[in-house]
Length: 175
Image (cartoon, rainbow, N blue to C red; front, side, top):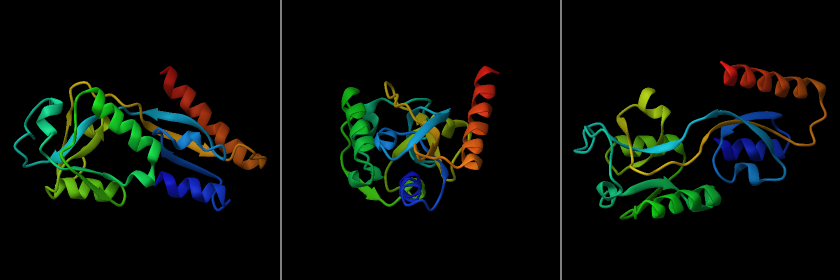
């Protein structure tokens, strides 16, 4: 999980990490990073057997009476606030919020029919067990994966790893 990696980087337990590129992660001055893969959050993850599961897209109002599953705001306050603002911008007001502890718990809870959570564009092609990813009209939150490290890193081996990721990222971006 991104938060554990950030804490581990700060405590110098790890030297690099690959974390979610969500709002707030790069606001920590103890962390430097570069986006490796962009993957926009634009979907609702619903159980495969949900009445809305066969839709090709959803209106925000389709979700308003279904409980919304997400992490507690304290876990990632800036990302949580960004998400809630994006919902408000498209007129989506979740009926209720159920907090869970981590992404896998979100996906499992959605698959178990406890509510819906957000998903990214890649979840449409790379399906998660028990859920379907359906785009929500108007929702578009930048996200993806990023390489993270300490900005004061001076170990040449670690800097070489960071540079190797940058080279791979540049090569894949140009193809």
